Amino acid sequence: MMSTSKPGGKSSRREQMRTRQRRQKLISTLIWGGLVIAILTVVGVLVWQAVRPAAGEAVTLPANSDQHVAIGTPPGPYNTDPPTGGAHYAETLPAKFYEEADVASLPDYPQGYLVHNLEHGHVIFWYNCETLDDTDCGNLKEQIRGVMEDFDGFKVEAFPWEALDVPVAMTSWDRIQRFESFDPALARAFVRANRNRAPEPNAP
Image (cartoon, rainbow, N blue to C red; front, top):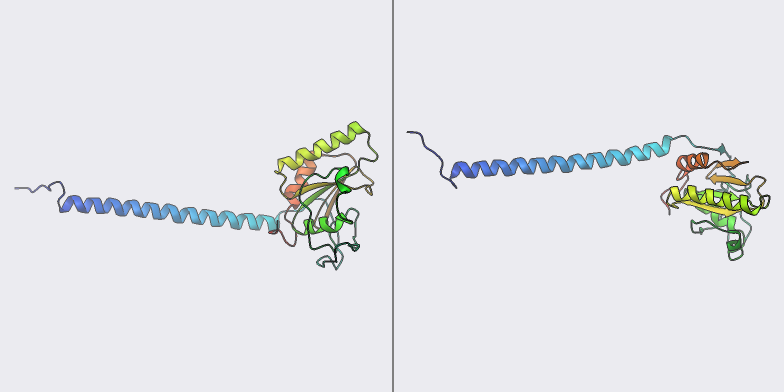
């Protein structure tokens, strides 16, 4: 005569235990799999940042590029104008779009702060509206803002720079891209390739 297990009997409890064990094993596998994927993603991003090709013209920086100078004293010297690296102040400027009217409220030698931004992996749009009429200047600023917004304003800023011999130049640490005519697609490529390619990419 065959025996049947009663509800709540040993056979039923063993089956419940096996089900819990399978569930726990599945959860454990999913957790470890997620951790492995997260680690591989982080490693992949770090490797890509290290090996991705840079954009723009390479610049040989001065030997003192890692040095801080006292705020208020002339920073530099710089191997390009606008700068791509060199001696700088120990403080940075907020990442934003600076209008010409903003410069009057800034301390002397704003480039000393902005080079520190570059050391932290920022990309700067230096623009000069002196040779443009109001309409062209407004259009240029709108285009630059559009590119900055594409990157959520993260580690990108724009700054007026009258010493420019072109309407716009972009700089990152040891890289420069000059524009006779602004090209938003090329500007986006410069940001993607060069942002955070700097000595201190993890700094804000």
